[in-house]
Image: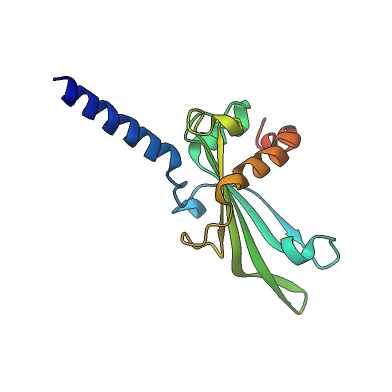
Length: 156
């Protein structure tokens, strides 16, 4: 009996550890979520080389509630989409996707980063993850400094 309990314990701990280390899921269908806002960073901006293009922010229903109340529940997910642009005759249009940045709320899993998990998908491809293990901490440090501005977009 002890052997069975020990084996069950090892399997349970292993499963919990695997969940904690599991990568953040790719945000399928995010363009059907609430569109929060857009911005265009053009050639005259100092960060144009890395940030130039059209920026869209999308929020799933839990994140919309969080924007309005200031309290983000577990499951809230925000996607930041960066697209290349092209211009012809004074009209700027969307081009190829440069990347998707994502933050998702899970207070237990991401306790060390304020309850938020972060990922960056280059070219919007699930297999092109760019953050690695320390990337989430860098994202969190920057977001924490700008928390009031970042999270106040949809408040009434």
